[in-house]
Amino acid sequence: MPTNIFRLNKCRNYSEKNNLTLVVNLAAQVGTQYSIHNPYSYIENNITGFINLIDSAKTNKVKHFIYASSSSVYGNRKDPLLKKLIMLTNLLVLCSKQKDQ
Image 1 (tube, rainbow, N blue to C red):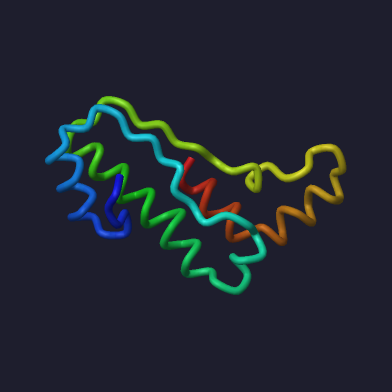
Image 2: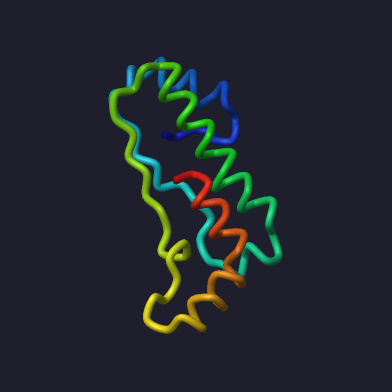
């Protein structure tokens, strides 16, 4: 979608104008270190943008919506202590992506 997903009206207009039947959401802030210094960017990308895409898809009766999550949600499953540490340091990413799921 070559439009700003942070603006609901632009998402809705694009979906309606192009008669979309499928939305594939790959939009997200990447890298957990960035979230520590720019949490609002993560919230805007991973939550606001996602909600706007879902809303515009629903409003325009888009039949299929595919969402790509992030490995940051799951962490390293081999070491329980490391998994807890990763989950704590990636808290904002984790919350924003799990909220979308």
